Image (cartoon, rainbow, N blue to C red; front, side, top):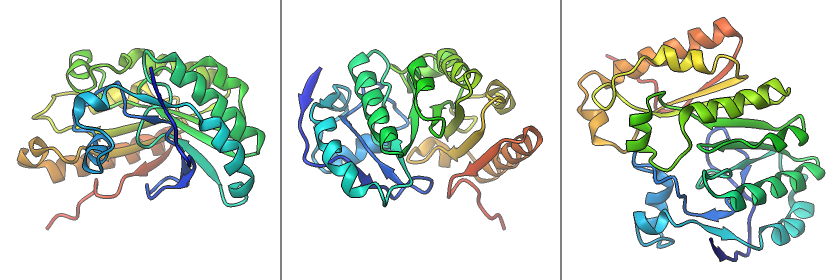
Length: 255
């Protein structure tokens, strides 16, 4: 795996449910084709040449060295650190990325900083040994493996993600799922309720619609469709006593 160096790591994020974040890899081998907003931004700002370059991830080899300098300076400002918003901390098939992520989480926890992780890979069992304040999540927008192979070709199988999340839940960890970016029926016909049932054990669900895809707006009733899914999410979470967050722009006021 190619290595790069950076001068800074921790930064304040503008993502609506985030605080600080760290992205210790440039690119992501999962190759998601929604399209991937992080890839589009990286291309726009000249960090990668295109999709193929994005799918050849580069590890920031001096991440720990930088953090050892940044944490003492920023720790009083940080409520939590998200791994990650523009890459994947447990990238499927890249153990060196997972190893670095574990080191980062432990370093932040040792400074009494809570971490939140989100992955389309496999959450390692070693996470149960970290701070009990941490929160671990997976992205799950379907249970259909044919759809995964089309849209998230190099990510972990859906069932493997769920099983790794359930293992951490059973170990007493705080768990969550990001059901985003969720597609419209003209992209895939599926039972949203089955997806909710598959993760009914989690502590929190975040739901958001698919954006930046012309097939969504081509679906005649896409606004009402997502509104119905929002209502279904809220009802399910209320019934199962699960916290929830609906991403901005997913619900639309209809005339």
